[in-house]
Image 1 (cartoon, rainbow, N blue to C red):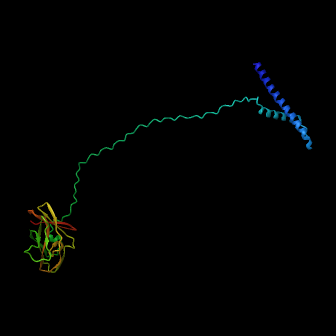
Image 2 (spheres, helix red, strand yellow):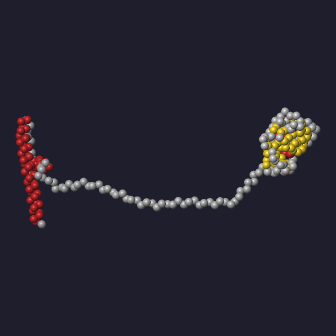
Length: 261
């Protein structure tokens, strides 16, 4: 223990003696320089003992800094290597299976459509057509024709021929006026539509013609006590065998069905 203390003390003395020896040399150099500078006319100031000691200590530190044989007791540590963080592998999330929507079972409920055309009950053709009181529309029968008017009928400016493989169904009506006054009739302007149902399963619409006696397009004045012979014409297959006919009149207030045969 005492030997180590003595060694340390000797080392410190050796270092101090070196420092002060070199400081003395530097002080001598500075003194010589100051002597050369006396020629400039400036007086060399006298230094006190404290100033000389500080100059010597400073000079010793400078000499040690530039002394190649002197090594610092401080050990320079190598620069720390940067720490590289390893990526953490994330565990894959478990797949979530989407639940399929439940299959809706087909409903066994049957929807019944009750939206049928309104059909006035117990209305005659005269009432449905809004004919004035005292006027009557009387059905006179039907015929199957290749053309209308036929050759043995009255003269007419227009003739309607059936299409190839077809026949014309001609319905005959008499419209009488016994109202006590002349009456203006306009079936075309009132927007009525006429149809015929053949054998209860085939419905045909009346042909629109330029015949003067076509009831579907009739417009005229019927004098009191007089009447007009009118027709409705439909086209049907030439091999048709008629067992029943129904007249269907459609208007803004619904429809009216009238059995004929």
